[in-house]
Image 1 (tube, rainbow, N blue to C red):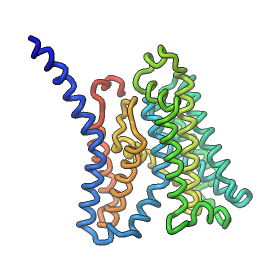
Image 2 (image 1 turned 180 degrees about the vertical axis):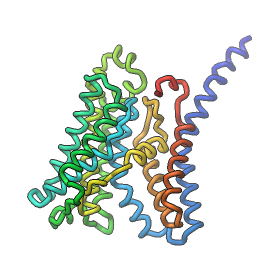
Image 3 (image 1 turned 90 degrees about the vertical axis):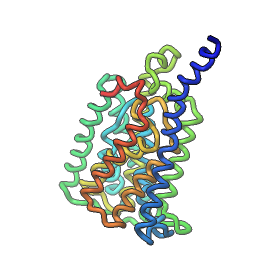
Image 4 (image 1 turned 60 degrees about the vertical axis):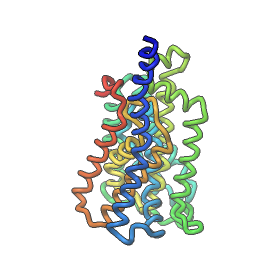
Length: 326
């Protein structure tokens, strides 16, 4: 009888341990597999020049994916990230001639206001985040279309371009800025009370409320932080393309959500890692880069990205919370 009672906890912990092992190992295994596959298919893949291209292509996605990590860990979703990035990029491009490098402030400010709008409707208006951000996805994109009338807004200010589109020691400034923002976000997520509250709310609102956490305020601040980071991503995107267009960052939502989930953050919320998101971003960027390099049909690329996303959700989702997914 004693043997049975001692062995029972071991059996109950085994599935949990194996699931967590799969969640943590999946990004590394997938990243290594993609690198080996594309390296064997193309001699140009494992080169310094291509590595810089991948990093530069990853900068905007990285900042937006870090923003989405806060939202998903909090148990919510933000479908408006692409439109927020586009609107912030438009503001940066339109004000670059007057403000130069300081156009970063209104760009981040607009992103912050977009996040504040989403957060107020979600946290205090008690509208599901999926519905709120689906609506603001259209609203923010509509503002971009209304202002541009479909015409690009070019950036010609040399101070702006040298600051955000230049290079130092061969490394693009967009990459340096994106990595700096990621490190700061990781410190906030892992080392502050706010970061712990985000995970607590995502893990269970009722328990978080009973423990004294101001749940509504945390929900609001998550979207504010997400919006500010998307504003920075918009600035980086505008500097990279040297213009803001009506189609800028269209479909970015899929890549962002895919990067976060592939990195090991389950859509059920409560747990997640910034370093996992970094791996997820590299996976998505390398997947796109490698498929382009090997000549994979662009339409097939979308199918393959969808397959990777579904596989990641299947392997990382916490099925004990499956009832919260609608």
